[in-house]
Length: 450
Image 1 (cartoon, rainbow, N blue to C red):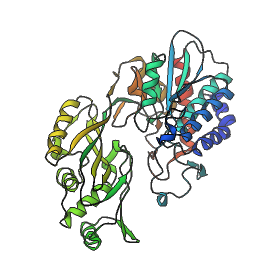
Image 2 (image 1 turned 120 degrees about the horizontal axis):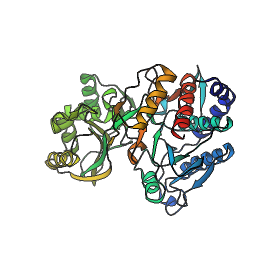
Image 3 (image 1 turned 120 degrees about the vertical axis):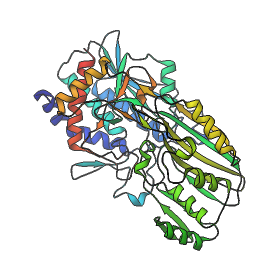
Image 4 (image 1 turned 180 degrees about the vertical axis):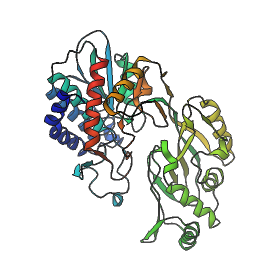
C-alpha cells in the first residue's frame, strides 16, 4: 500500500468501523409480509433503512446518489466520462440463526481482539463500506476519475436477486466491475445456482425447519411421537442434539451452501435418525434414501464436476411438513459446464417416485470470465503488488452479483490466510484484513477508472 493510501486509511479507520457498526445494527433480514406490498420497502422496513443509511453515507462522502422509486436498489457515483465501471454490494443479510451459538448480539457490532463481530461484517456490509471509503480516499487525494465509478447497492441478494434484476432492466450496465462479496484473489468462474421446492401431500408427522435455502441448517426441532426412540437413534448415530420441554433439537453446523461439505446439516441428521426408528413417509424416505449425508447427492446425479468449478453441491435448507402439505427446499450449485436442464429432469424423475412435484424458485446463470481478460489481468497485478500472494484466479460455488452482468468478477474480501465466516455464528471481519482490502480496492478503483 502506498504511503498516501496508508495515511488515508489511518485517518478514516475509526469512521469506517463506526459506519460498518451502524449498518450491522440494522437487522436487514428479508421481510415479505403483506404490509410491505406496494411500498418503497418491498423486502422489509429494515432493508430499506439499510439502503437509506448507505445512500446518506454516500452523500456525506461526496457521491451523487440515486434510489429506485420502488425500493429495489440504489447507487452512488463519482467521476466523469462515457464509460462506467461498477462496484456491487448488497445490504441484506441472512438471519442470525441460533442465537445461543453467538458470543454477542449479532446485530450489535463488537470490536474484540482486533476483529469486528456482527451479522453482515463479512457478508457484505463490511466489504461494501471499505470499498466506498477506498474510493473516498482517492477523492481526498484528488485522483482524476476518467470513467464514472458507480457503487450499486442491492437489497435481495440473499434471496431471489429481484433487486439486481430490476437494476439490469432499468439502468445503465457497466463495462466491467467487481463485487467484494467473496474471497481473494478473485473468482473468475461461479457455479450456476438453482433453488427449488419439492412439494408433496401432507404427512402424519409435523416438522418445521424454515431456514435459508443457501445455508446449511444448524438446528432442526422435533416434538412429535416416539421421542425416546428418536433419542436412542441419535445416540446410536452419534449425532448431536438437545432436549428441552419435550422437544428434541438436532444440532448441526451452519456454513454457506456453496461449501456444504464443511457443514453439518441438522435436517439430514433429524431425518436419518427418524428413519432409523422405523418411521417412513415420502419426505423422510426421499431425504434418507436418496441424499443421506452426501453433500454432492451422487446417488441421484452421479459424479457431476468440471475442472473450472469442481463438484455439484446439494443442500437441503428447508423441511416443512404438515398434515396438509410437505415441502423440501433445496439449493444446488451446478458446475459451469454442466447442463441445468439435465439436472432438473433428473431431480424431477427421482422425486416423482416419492410423490413430489418440482417447483422452481430461482436460477442464476453461471459466471465465467476468461483468465486473459483485461479486468482479470489488472486485478491480478494489483493483488500481487499489494500482498505478494499468488493471484491465480479461482472458481466458487457461491453466487455473487458478478454473474448478473458481463465482465464482472468477485474480488475479495476474504484473504487466503483469513477465515470465511459468512452465514455463520460470530461472523467477523479482522482489522488486518480491513487495512489490506482498503489498499487493494483503492488501487483497483484507481486503475479501472483511468
